[in-house]
Image (cartoon, rainbow, N blue to C red; front, side, top):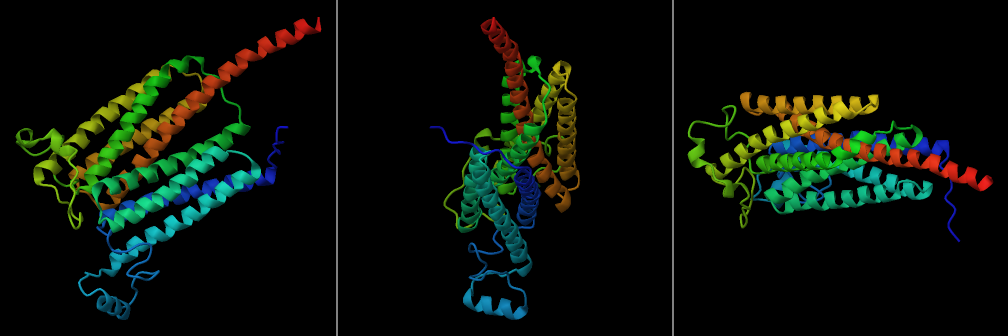
Length: 360
């Protein structure tokens, strides 16, 4: 006997939707705080995890600093960096609790359980990556993975929110969009690789290596090394402020710029082709938003070079990259749903015809 799936009441649906809305806002704040912590060199502001120098709070007063200095005589204690790090952890912990509430709620209302389970697993993985980021002294591979995990978490939360919305709002069928799905997946992969390369640039402290535009200082061609881009620096006591030589950092930075150009034209091409084929105002608005975020991201990247990585601009560059990936995920989701709607709508007349023939 099949289990009976109880319908979602209006109150349950509204409460669940609000939980997801708050989680999305918190995810954006956590991503911004993570970028701020990294850019202010506060990633090791607290050398232990989950506390700070054995306590649950960062040092607040001179007496606290003196006490900690006695317990950690060889540590360089910088309270402002410890505060940045702990604020990031507090908000991330709050987001984790909220995601736990979303997962439990999905089990109770019997909706979106698979997606909510994926989000919960990702939060646990993010917590582990956050711990390893500190305990492994900012090893670049872990730092980059932690960055990507935060972006994926935001994307999945927004994906859940869009599914909640589309469950109560009909979508316009888009039969002509089926042929663009492989292209869309390819472009999404390019965006993901470019974001990973940006995280790799930041984790290796290579953002300020090249200060000229559009590529780098004169003579960069003779010092560029493709192999050094993917070199994993292992065996160091700490990776704070970077351990790679100038040539490797320069190569990473240049690769990120080249990837930015490839990403820009790939996304732009996808939007142009899909715009010509779509007939849905909702999908057109999504594409316009995606295009605007793309232009904003490129502009922020150029400003990072000309203004020598100003803090707020660099944080914004990080946040916009997260939204770019999220919008690509939502765009692919919309293509799948609109194609699926075509199949459903086309099958309705066939079913009706069969019923009529049986009635006769």
